[in-house]
Length: 517
Image (tube, rainbow, N blue to C red; front, top):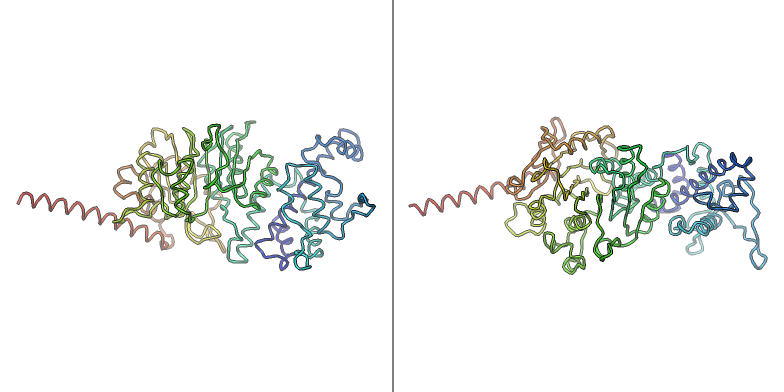
């Protein structure tokens, strides 16, 4: 499938900026999937009713027999000109036959939406016949090449042909390839697959758990929670209850496609979570969940007035109002989303666990960390390898929150250095799939492991002035590369903290000696 996607992307390369390729390819990929599954369901009906023509006639009469009904003009055999179709005339007797493949695709997706209103805003997000200054955005001849690529029998997308998570993988693949080609993140901030699965294995969702991602992008983290839940309990028929919020229209559409293709029920709302969280309880407070996973934008700038005048009181009463940086504001929002037994895993910049520690000046982020530590809400921090994310070379951390720690983990914070097993890639590093479950198991055991896991007490966190970076507590892997600049700075911060405490203790001792002199 990756070869199919890249062949298709190359067909229109030069027609659109690389960052926009996915906006055209993914709806086409989704339409091809719907068409192939439609054919599978017609074949199933044909076995029951005797032949394919009878099955099509029955499906045309009763759309409820299929999950999604595709009208004839939207079926791939017609789109690819492998099957004829008699286009009707309009009310004025003019033919409705499209002039070219671009018009045909736009008519096709709009027809699909008419018959399947739940796909509105999902499959019809682009106009394949759009023009600018009298020129098509995508040349119809190039678009025909894409259709031909998708029509290759090797690339069938029916029920038995591809893994159920293929669209999410396709989305990530396209983003990765575009980032490689352009040196940027194709306008998206997404979570590498292995990081999403690591978070899901740490959360270990159970059947029926209510799960939320307030910055859900393509819904990849939610999908991975459900996939891991099925792995942990393959006989359960009770799905997770999944909820996501996403600001960007394109990502919202892909999230809906992702959920549909996985045959998962995901309730997704559009909007700015920080300003207008969409999911609320009957009392208009923020709805709470068993599990929250998220990878919000790192170091995001916000107007501090948003925090000061928050109608949900997420900040003032949960550690105080932060600066204009959003990292700890996102964690405060995360906490507001957790029920009395809730747990969370949130990906942030490494600075979120160090900024302000050791500073002689009052620091709001450090004070919020202290508030979380004092209330035993931080279950642990996982340091991820550097050069893992496509929009930055910096390392990230997963901050794990828990409102009901087991007795063995109370008043302790587990710090895991996940950089030891990093595999070097081009242009990005990655965590090998074989390492994901052992890393999660090591974190969940919560026992010290030389060079990998440290377990600190609240008192130790206080002594370090709430510097919670795993690199502060866990030694670098033997034989590994030299520490990156951020790790060195974290260690330097720790030295400053220790120096400040020693200086304070020395001044206290000298004061007592003077009093005795």
